Length: 440
Image (tube, rainbow, N blue to C red; front, side):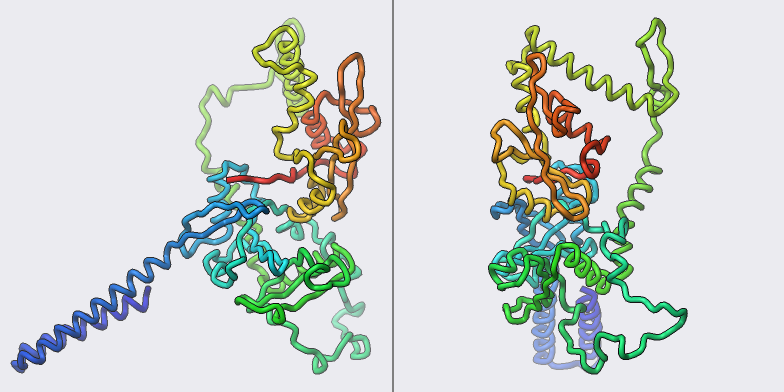
């Protein structure tokens, strides 16, 4: 657009010179006619260029939301980044903005996918995609996990170091001399993708394959396929490639949401005097008292929540407008939660956990395939996926749910999840991140 502005100024100056020459030297009508034609052609050219730039500034981008190909078309400007588009989709789908949403570039025919970096321009990425490629909108809790827990991604045995201060590594200890090395790929013009179907499409020796793909519509022979022995090694190598390619930009992307949260904290309006004067009160005795201890106040709030749930069940027994019996309600209420995924298979639960980052505490609940009355908690810990069966047990005519053989019982699965979000119990870690799907 800047070059067009310069061209407009140049043409105006040139045309002014022509008119001044005509006035001074009394040029013939034929020359004036030629100048008019020249003016018309210049104006037409500039109009075409202007509307072409205006058209490129806004385009329609199809963002696929589900794995079955269903999607939504959103209108975005040409300078919109992946982070801004995620913010827009979060707003349109009424999701919780926890800075864990990501835009995924997906190539189903090649079995490749990668999360776009927050600063990448979506239009530029789409221009390099083939017709079968699409964007997915999903959670990715592990996008910046290496900044929070670097040792999980770069263990000490993967780091080469010299024992002597300011020393040197002799040539005999080098894996390969530089003159013997061959160029595999240039990361400046390429991106690193996860291979989702390595054994099936590319005959990979293991399931842990990743790929270096040029930023253009390439053929299969131009892909550089690499393979590791386990998931942790693949994650470490892909993270190292990302850091090498983007450097400090990744850390800036990681810090931006935290800076925005700090700014929004300072910019929030001051609450009214009546709101600031609210305190936690204990009315269990004859007279009320103010609860000064914040831990005691939080415990009282949780007890009040459980008491409210019991009161609502008691109202159902006595004759509530709700047609559901409390036992029936406790057996179906979990189906309204985003972390419950019904009758999915064990393999599908693994795929969902893999897609959303494999961080500690990532979990989902599903129906058990072996026991129709039981449920299964699928939990990720140290990049390994574990399954815990939740069995129903009856006591005094009431059904409870437990995953530790009845030592800790809950009236419904929501209570169970809330408990293990605060307490580790028999689990290897607390429940931190629900594995969810979203529909626009």
